[in-house]
Image (cartoon, rainbow, N blue to C red):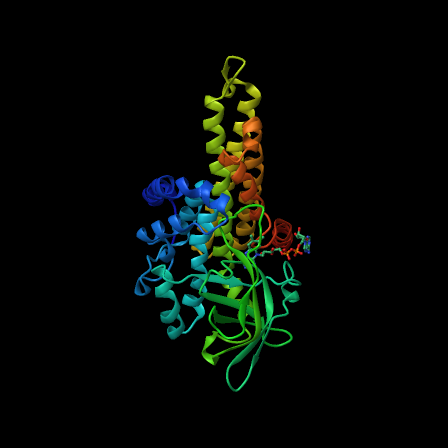
Length: 376
Ligand SMILES: Cc1cc2nc3c(=O)[nH]c(=O)nc-3n(C[C@H](O)[C@H](O)[C@H](O)COP(=O)(O)OP(=O)(O)OC[C@H]3O[C@@H](n4cnc5c(N)ncnc54)[C@H](O)[C@@H]3O)c2cc1C
């Protein structure tokens, strides 16, 4: 598929998402953050638009939305509430099952996830295996009764809240498999919810697998191809995390523009002052530069261009660094009020930080970008 005119093709969907985010998501964002609980109002409202099912095939009740559609949805949600964007898009991890799972696995898991009756999560990170995949210790051993899983997964989004977990585990000393684990399986338990700096509406917890025995048919695809399956889905998923950062950056810019227009000092709106204008101009440039690279990367992914890998990492770094930098400047432009929980920029500032850390830290992304540049 060749994407030429992004704006024409997707602007109606963006307008619909924007309206939805402003009317149904934004009003709950501060309370969800304050109470540190899942954004149920936004999640349930998102079902009316079919957002949990956005990327899935129509045969499973999904909408078959392409990568660009998914990015727009994530960006517009994150623009007003980063936790809601995370909660809705974490459902999409089951695209891995749509791509590599058996029909029976797909039929068991995807339709309830699309309908919002069940939730999903992705378990890769471990106490000793964060940036370094080879540090993954969780083991999966084939026995006559099924697969026996042992290990701890750390920082799992939706941990304890999701019904289904895709667990990345070592099947041989050199290779990994992906396993479908239910929260009700014997030997599955959860750590206490993590007390986080930001993204407080998105639950995060350890997933502990202690002699967890699951049926043979819960293995996804082949037992030694887990890393290959992740790599295949990586680009689209990396772009999604980039869009999440971009949404936070855009939201912080929106807030800064609106505040500086109405706040008066020295007898005029602070937006009249040149130093304020220069900051807003820089913030706008960072947002638009990041968006341009994200759209370019998405086009390359859609066209299956080999350069997609490099641009997906660039988009992840540019969008999430923009989130942190624009949110920091937005707080600055609010003066003392930016330091108060009464203003959205305080939450956006805290939410922005994680975007530079997860889905491959921005240092790791830079290593990959350099590798691609040297290899070209
Ligand atoms: C809120 C939240 C939600 C998350 N959700 C999930 C989830 O759903 N599923 C999941 O599997 N994981 C999840 N993660 C985990 C996340 O992906 C990891 O935290 C991340 O990959 C970094 O791993 P680490 O925390 O072990 O840091 P480390 O790998 O220990 O890194 C520490 C620091 O060292 C740097 N570093 C490490 N190696 C290198 C190197 N070679 N060169 C240069 N610098 C290096 C890193 O960039 C970082 O700055 C989540 C994390 C958070 C905070």
